Amino acid sequence: MILIPEEDKTQGVAMNIVNENEFPKDMHPAVVLEDRCDGCAFCVDICPRACLKIVPNPHRPSHRMVRVIAKLCSGCGACQGTCPKEAIYIPGLSTADLRAYIKKALIMAEQAGLDQ
Image (tube, one colour):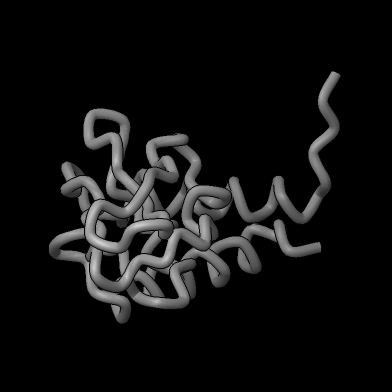
């Protein structure tokens, strides 16, 4: 049996509520700006679909970058919200939109009593 910490359950339930009711359907897959990506892998670690992988950067020998497996990407924006270099984004999803969805999820979780 896998035990999930309560705070992880709360976040997951809240985001599912927002995703099912508010998040735009049919989002485009993530796009990586190769000149900005330094291969830190923050986005790889956070991706719920495991659609990101680290590869050698063809433009910068001895450096790495992230590559998107587009057919697996749902366009959820987790990578975009995590990247410190703003090197990955979902076309049509602004950072302001992403923050609004997160804020709404937190409010919904609080109202549903999931934040306790």
